[in-house]
Length: 269
Image (cartoon, rainbow, N blue to C red; front, top):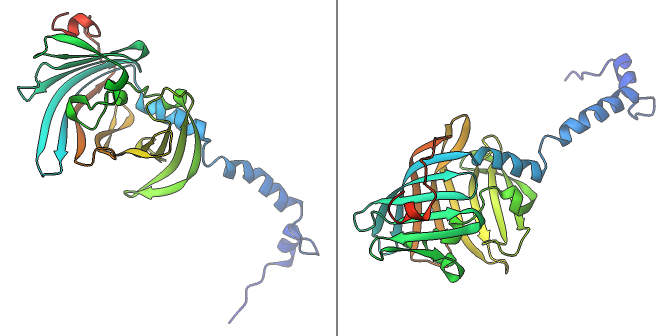
């Protein structure tokens, strides 16, 4: 077998007589080190990029929410919603007939109301009601009150990397900056290329796992990537799981006047 040896002249440029690297190799290492170190953004930068990708000025969507029960039956509801910024949203259920006309309003400062046609008036959502499921789903009113900008509410560390559903992800562990948040810690699997979460685990202050979300059907909309399907499993409610499928999604839309008002919530702008 023929052994290929480096040219003595070339080897002497990289290694001295003692075999230690000489200055050209050291210089190359020093130059490349910052680039290698910066291959993975900081946790703060990852959250910033995710927030930039996942939040928008205004949006309109129609969606179907399916609650699956352990008995093998399911219940489907459809709704249309409008949102503005990170803290104003309006949602109206359109089907089935028994739920049509039920509406939800969220304003600044986590002020929320729900209007049920059979009750005939709006009800303020606060206190223990925040833990109740939106229209009997696994999505709580507290979930609806969350600020979608995670960088504002959580500090993060990178726990590692993992391939999930064929996609490379960063695993981030988030800790709440304030005690009043619905979840005191989160674990997120962030798609490294599309900058969307593909999986979320939500924990109580005690560390108990409360909810797990799987996000899929990721599509490019208006130059961004966005998951159009969310499957939510509530660890405290073993007999149900909920799937939210976005049917139509538009960003940067014009919001009708009077949309985010109690008058509109109760039936007229």
